[in-house]
Structure formats: structure tokens, C-alpha cells
Length: 358
Image (cartoon, rainbow, N blue to C red; front, top):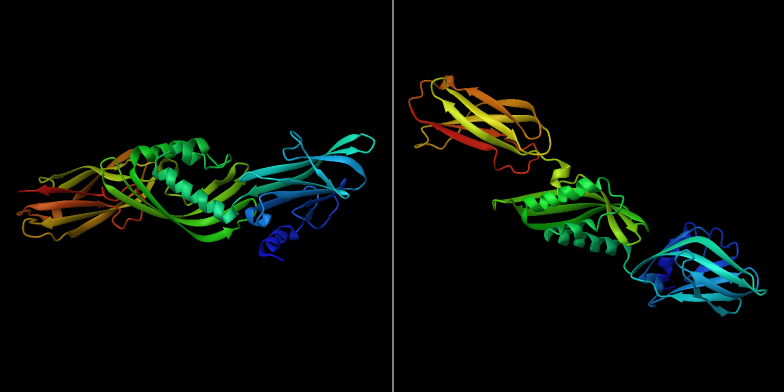
């Protein structure tokens, strides 16, 4: 037995040989008996070097002729009689789903149409190879900022399609020179004939509209489904790469900073320009005594902003009277989220400094 033949028989092992008789006869696909109502998944390997799939019907009684339909009875092809059976060799498209029916003409001229409820799915490449192609197409269309091509790779039942399209378009408005890298890390489920789930590590390098360079990486759990037009991306979990607007990200910035020498008070306006609520924002306050002679920052203290909503701002202040008298120039520095515990669009705009000269 060839390796391809063994692979094909394994497809049927768990159910397709349970009840070998179709109600109007025996149906065989590639020499394997198929029960009514079953689904069959085939690849190029299963054709054993040939370009056609062999369908065979052995009627339960003598008949004059048989036609076969692959589209649920919309169109028909005549099968060739061989002994007591009828055979048709079908050349499939690269990706094709076949809904199998037979039109049988009896010796007395009576014609009957029988739906087998057998669905045959063929793809030239195997599921793993097809998903690899899909991942490469996702990468290419995203790098080329082609939202239509990218979204054509999404399943029709992908959750939140309208919002996701808007988020992808937002990515392309805000990001330039996008480069993606991916690596499949773990097969969580499959691939079976119809779906698969993978953990995929994605790395993304890009520039914002000002030309600043950024990078991000995340392991995304990606679910794929086989649909009539091929394999599609059906869902994602832990996605921080594709569609940042939909995902929701924090973007903390220091909007303004000032220091009042009379009251020795530092005042700053903190903005959240992102699309997600920011919570437990730690803020560190530093000072540098006589910055012309030293660059050493000294921590003066910290505080926490419990929450800051989307497109919101808050004014904070810090009393530095403990440093009196301020006889030398001082730099006063504020750093937002110093340990980078909050995922943000950019970590580069979290620091600001103001100089006080007595």
C-alpha cells in the first residue's frame, strides 16, 4: 500500500466504513466505500499521481444509465458503465466542494434523482500547507496596506467584521513601512478537514506618521476554517498586532509640564490619547540638582492615577518644598508608567522635563 493510499484510508477509518451501503447502491470515492451523509476531505496526495477523482456507483438493481452531479443537482455529467457499476472521473479545481447527487434511469425508462448528502472537499494542497499560504498572504497584504486583500482572507463569520475593517484601515492611516514576521509555535487543534487552531508568534516593525520607529510582538491564538473559497482566518485571541483601534490600546502622554518656583510645585497634564481605559498609572517624579554639572536623576517620590478614560486628561501636581532652598538650577522630571506595565501605542512619549533657574 502506498503512503498516499494509507493516508486516504485513515480519513475514512473513524466513520466512513461503518455502513457501506448507500440506499440506492454502493458509492465509492477513490476506491473507498462512503456512507450516505458523510464528509470526505481529499488533497492532491490522495489522487496518487493522477489529476482526477474517481467516483463509482454500484446500483442495488439493474439500471440503464446514471448521471452524477457535483453541485446538488444543478448540472449533470454522464457516468460510464463498467460491468454492474458506473464510473466518472472528475478533474477538480484547486479548491472545490462537491455536493454529490445521482440521477438514475431504470431499464423501463423511469428516472429518479437521489441526493446522497455526501460532501467532498478537495484542495490541491494539504491543510497545513494551505494555512501556511494563508499566513503568508495575511503578512503580504498587511505589509502592502491593502485592506481589501487582507479582509478577503477573513472568514464570513469572523466576529465584529465591520469594526475590524475600520480598525485595519486605521492601522494603515497611522502606520508606515510595516514589516511583519511570523512563526507557528504550537498546533492546539488540527488541522482537521475543516478547522485548525494555532499559536502564531507575530512581530511587527513600523513607523508612525512622524517617521518614528516602533515594534511590537505577540503570540496570537488563531483559528482557521475551511470555507468553499478556501481556508480563512475565523477568529483571534490575544491579538495586539492587527487592528489596534479595535483591540483598544492605551497611549499616555505628558500634555504639558510647569514648575512654580514660588510654591515649589510641579504641575503636569496627563493625556490618554488611546482607545482603552488606562488603570493604575504609576508616575515617578525625579529631579537633577545643577544639571550643568550632573546628569544623575534622584527619585523624589511617586503617585498613582487610578484610572484615565479614553481621550481624557488629568492634572497632577507634586510639592518639592523639601528641596528648599533651591539655590541651583534644577531639572524636574516626570515619568509615566516607568516599568512599562501598561501596553501602549508608544512608550517614547511617557517622559517630560522642565528646568527651574533661580
